[in-house]
Length: 387
Image 1 (cartoon, rainbow, N blue to C red):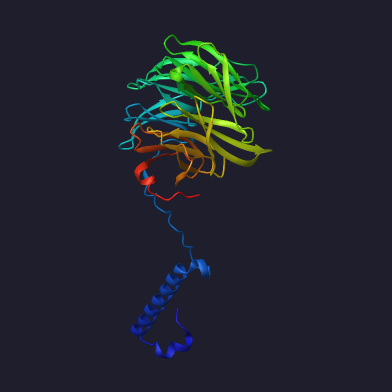
Image 2 (cartoon, helix red, strand yellow; image 1 turned 90 degrees about the vertical axis):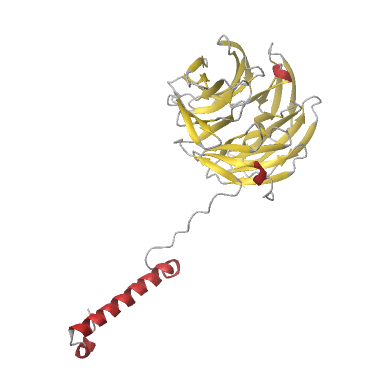
């Protein structure tokens, strides 16, 4: 334990004990130093940096889903937030406290949620649940839930197509809540095929009409008090008369690629379209275009995300547009100029959905990382935009 060369001076037990204590102190000190400088000296365990805390504008993170959160929506009174997830659940939250209020179980992954205008019903759209194999066929559903009790009010079954998988990727109510539009994507075992938009009468559980769309995962928005339906349609936005299905007009920017998502301003005057270009799986750019609904005039086109845009939402006053992207960030833009106002970073995966609270004070975001984040808009708009 001690050097033999020192044996003559360490004949007493007391002396030996003093030497041993000194040896242990020196040894422990060496281990401590090695731990502190381990990243340089490669001794002991490496120092692991702690994760940074949430950004000042991040108010709360809601955890409870076991998979990607594909869609978020606020109730019209702002007292409930719904989130739909690939874990086959819809969760209802109290956005003021972050407390989970209720869990609704679905048959397949939940890709879309939307509240009826009066807040009494919630629509959820699901993906096909069978394995994607050449011999299988499957289709998702749209369910209407009573928001107060969580009981099923109605189920709308997407029609089956042989050897195809059809998933409900978007749901939206017309003003008044009597008509529901569902964007339905198509997939075979080998390739995607053209999607459809289906209108249902929520009062009698009846399918009203179907629109064939030249995009795999269509999104829709009602205009003109529900009389017109705007639909993503390949590289353009196509407008249909909701009552007859007659095609009316279309908006298009030929150089921006496919239109993937839509949002209508609260006053119904501006339509925002999220667009993205890719080739052979390579990302080539994403854009937002603002259109004047009445004239078809392009108001602004802007970009800033490093990957495709998944979701758009207007603030209740129509002055701010939020975009959620596969680059894991949310950007806030001034309307109608397209000026970048702020970038919100905090999710660990793509941001798949964004939604404003009715009072405009809170923005909710759902991510592939399985969380929902609530952002303080007053604090977010104070930060300098990150470009």
